[in-house]
Amino acid sequence: MEVAYYQDRFLSSTDELAIPIQERGHQFGDGIYEVVRVYNQKPFMMEDHLKRFERSADAIMLQLPYSREEMKAIILDGIQRSGLDNVDVYFQVTRGIAPRIHLFPDTPAVFSMIIRPARELAPEKKQNGVPVLMLEDERWANCYIKSLNLLPNVLAKQHAFKNGCEEAILVKDGFVTEGSSSNLFVVKDEILYTTPATKGILHGITRKAVLQLANTLKIQVKEEHFSPSFLKAADEAFITSTTAEILPINKVDDVLLPTDHTVTKQLQQAFQSLK
Ligand SMILES: Cc1ncc(COP(=O)(O)O)c(C=O)c1O
Image 1: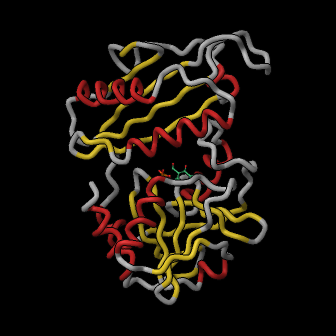
Image 2: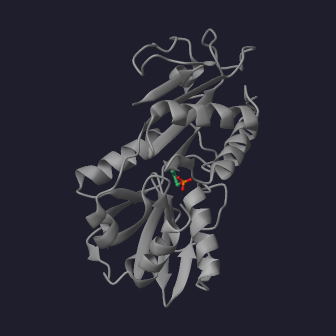
């Protein structure tokens, strides 16, 4: 079953509570979030997610209401309560509940969480790949912060979907940054390329796992900026995220990519062993 938590307590259902109107997450998107995947009741790379959560909080000068250990305990309790083996845990902290003015309020931050059955991607997508659409990256300069402000990401994803694509690949100043909710990798001449972890992209946890696996598998990696035409000329390309894991790309705009996915498959297989 689904599990929900808001400000120090588990709710009886996800519909129990209406968020106070003067919630800063609701009114300003003034907060941060994480999504953790749970395989067989075991949260995947939870420590990395919690560290990134703390970095995001620091970056927006937000005092988290709980310690890392307290957050872990709440998340593990929630997973148990769900009674499910494979779930997605979404949690966020906002700057709290206060009359609406832009300046920071003097109220405690609010932690909330929702746990739902894991969204499994169709196996044929994992095997054959998905089409993507390149779009202008219209986001701000601090995309390394996992902020609640996702309007440009939402618009890009919707635009891609309307054009029959699974993901929008974002392009800024002539270089590819990342997907609307994923990081991007390209394989060219047996070298694995990905955009460096600057402030302009989210430092994905799955991206980190893939870089570690590439190291173990002795695949050469270059963290470099690359252009849309480099992506279109790729031998292989794939996106990564907590929920999509490693997902091959079979088409970029109107350009078909090769479909043997040799390196991608190697990484997908190695990823299974991490779970
Ligand atoms: C913009 C963006 N980039 C990358 C990712 C992938 O990050 P992770 O692998 O930590 O899920 C996400 C995940 O939601 C994202 O929203």
